[in-house]
Image 1: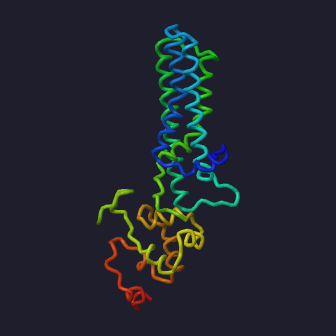
Image 2 (image 1 turned 180 degrees about the vertical axis):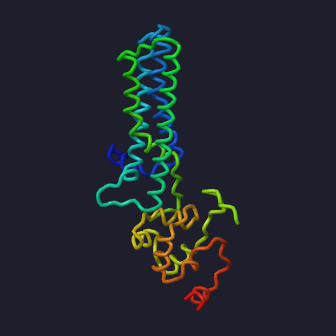
Image 3 (image 1 turned 90 degrees about the vertical axis):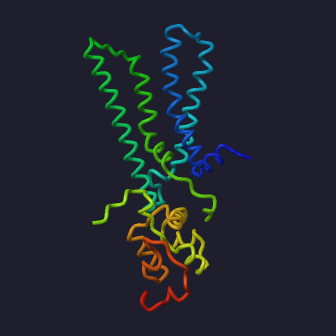
Length: 163
Length: 92
């Protein structure tokens, strides 16, 4: 019987197609939750009782994706005690880190540029409530980016690759 | 001067005889990986030409099989293997 522990142990063998779906889910769920709330619920276009299950589902998709990809990357990004990455794994990890921090730099740069542009058009007041989703998003996705990047780029080990 | 191959392109492909040598010595991928201190999947990636080993790893593989590195790795596909080709004096 599949237990949470046995499922977690199987995560490092996820196929690339599944990994990519999980990465998309992880990155789509939470931003869609915020967008949906801002565009539909806050202006009163969608009643809260209808939105609530959708919000829970979107957040669950993000959490599921993040959890599964962290599980996939266990022992692949950082070296665990008694386990050393070989040269192929280190090369892949380095590629993942370079990609991840390139994306992070671009996203943060675009965000700052966007805020600067808005500020040029008039006074911009950002309250604590406006920043909370951004802080949660950064906290959720910044440490996750290298894992997501690795899960996206690592090719599948072919079926005949039995030890 | 020859143009530098684009990373990841077919022109970077390194052909190898690892599966043959491994089978000849009755070694599994896990055995070879353990002897080299690498992950067994890395052996698979090298065998399929999806990962080109560093010079250091290639030399360690050659030392393990007691063969010159060019008897195991080549830029061109290997021709039909002749048993004597692995023990020709020129390779020793």
